[in-house]
Length: 248
Image: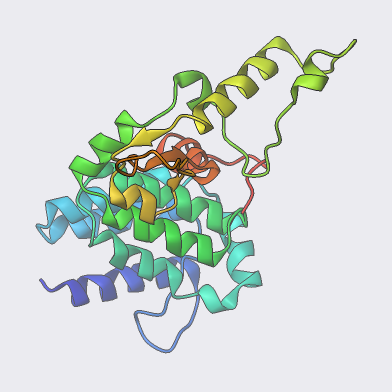
């Protein structure tokens, strides 16, 4: 069975469950709860004998933690995104690792909830579809300690600051102060030979190289992790997130 026919069938299933009309059978969006249609879509993809694609679709639907009201409200407010639901299934064809479908599910959830914009979603999809198992394994070697990854990182997070910590009184708990120190220590952790993909995706950035007149050769370029890397790790790679603290 061709992928085109499969996508048309999925679009028909989605359309039947949402009641949305569109110009052609590929133009239906996910206007109803993904959980409500997960069983029918995954059952159909299973019948195609494409077991890997079936598993990727199923994992995506299980990871995208949305309810009917949230999805309906999004598409009512954003009619230009009606094709997005089926486009996501097309994107899943480019993946073959379970973690990829999980990460796409988390990114899609953030977009539907209005936590990220379409530009950020497209960037995330580009990163996720570019991952292979080797890069995922390498990425895991670059993860910060668990004390950081268990908390969702806010891109607008500001340092507590030493003046506040060592002042006469502070409103911060020991846990918050400890987290703050660990975050900034990690962000200042310089590495050599960082994979080029991590640099291209904005996970790591080059640090300034100190030059002196007596250098016989240039020192090796070092890179340090970015705030976006922490955000990606804690919201896309590690967590299924539905709270209000997320930023674009």
